[in-house]
View 1 (cartoon, helix red, strand yellow):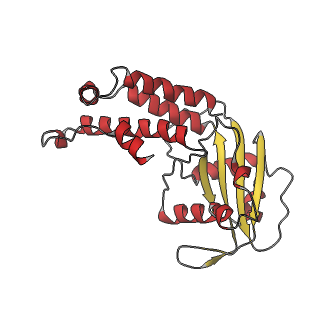
View 2 (cartoon, helix red, strand yellow; view 1 turned 45 degrees about the vertical axis):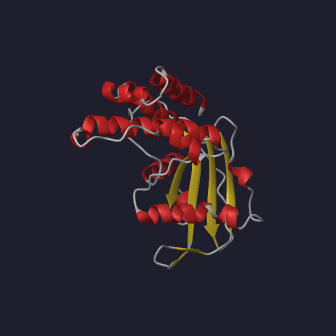
Length: 235
């Protein structure tokens, strides 16, 4: 996989003048990011873009979700899968206790997930209809807990995994409980659309560089189309 990505995503080394050309730097970075997303999607069973807003949030999210791998008897990795063409998921983490989190009204709970996400987010048009296709929550809590009847709302398909193992914060303090969420909402296609539109508007000088280095002359158009194709099938 590394060899494939290094071939697909490589670009010419910048000259000393290019170092100060922010447009070219950003365009190179954008093409590499977009092409990496497309190829990782093709190579992966589950793909989670991960951009934590703080060290603690990232550590807690991964610690909670990785419990599925560390204690396989408690749950199955396949519980996290939705359908083969919907691989990209949004990871969010909550330090609220499960009792407090699931006592929230469903839309308030969604707002909480959105505010605590590690997904690469950007400004989106407010007021547009939301989509909630899938959510799998991993709950780590020592005490038995019965989920409320509306715990899965407003998602079309929802499931939960409970792991009765003690979770520690990065400071090694035990936590009463935590919840991490993998979900497919309208944020996923909007992220892919954002990448597709960005690729279409990269600096033409950088497109020329990539072409001179062996990229197909239609490579940018193909990348743009691939991202929109993924966007259409992601929810």
